[in-house]
Length: 278
Image (cartoon, rainbow, N blue to C red; front, side):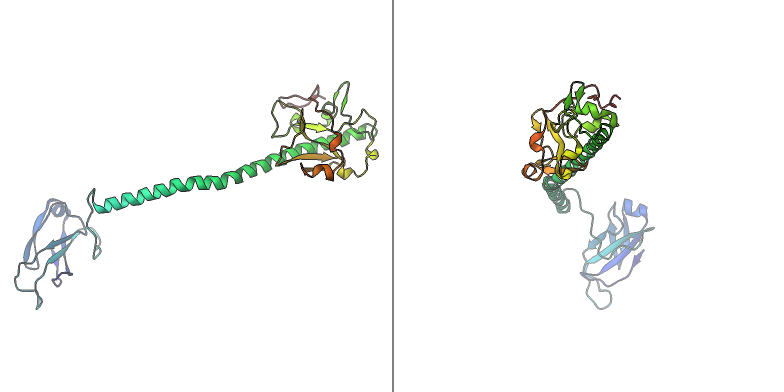
């Protein structure tokens, strides 16, 4: 079945076929001419046939016959549906070119995105570890204040015959990881250095301006360890904890030049992270 229309170089006629007719091919009469529909014709295909010069439709001359194929069961095809492009044609090559350009852009962008985001993630991770270290030091400083309350307001000594400062305050600390900085080697405990306080000879009241008196901070066998962004976390005599910069800490706070030697854990500390002995 065909629908009418004027013939000419830019005029389409419409031919409706069944699925079998389109698949197997057939011969149909369109606008007074017998045309051969090739096998495998698809819905929306445009078929062009040269006019044979018979009298025109109406008063116009007969030009090429352009037929749009429609299949039963499909909606109306677009007026200018493009024909299928075979493999290896210019259309396929164009799609391949676009795909290659997209892949190249993706490969080019991945290192740039990584270079921008990785430092951000690294900085966020460092801030998280810094916060964990400060939390540990806060527990240590509170334990020292509790020790002083039980021992006639005396400061915790750096070391005595029975153990180190960490052993002395271990009964006041819930778990041994409080003595470990997340950035320090795991087998090192404690990972902080404490002020060189002689055994039970210094009272809290003897030190003026407790808010500026550094009692302990990040450290190891070599002394103070500036682990956190060119600085270290420190706890003060009044119990607060803060980050101190390597370049300015000595001029702003007291006690940095009086840190005792690093001492390892004794009976009160276990390097496996278990609870301290009571």
